[in-house]
Length: 135
Image 1: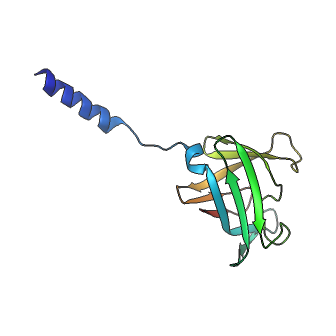
Image 2 (image 1 turned 45 degrees about the horizontal axis):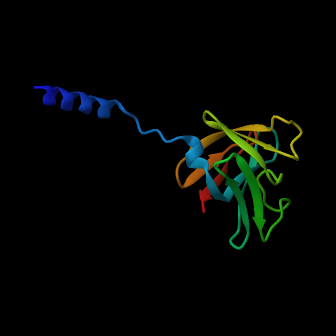
Image 3 (image 1 turned 180 degrees about the vertical axis):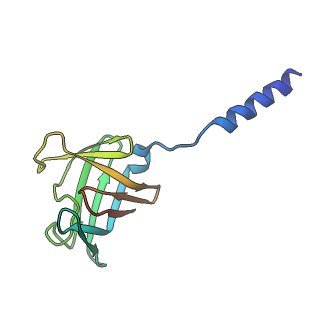
């Protein structure tokens, strides 16, 4: 009888558990920017696709370091923040990036509009999403 009760309780425990991955774990790694909507005005943006042969990359390491780097391009042509290295922290469904070129020592809090193991979408400005795929 005890073994049946144990199996029932174990079944309830497994049924009630959730498998919600930690956003910080999902975010860790290197990501390639594939498209973004560059702000044109305070309420509009222009879609930009990164051409093949050029690359904009961001890396979030497990220790809270953030890096942005480029391949065959410069931030003026294609870019995310254009700030280089810094720190980051996941805050709920947002990421706060703190880098040297930012005007605030608190950095910028940016919402994830999508976060999965192979794709993230971040909205760093009031208009336009930046779409990244895992490298």
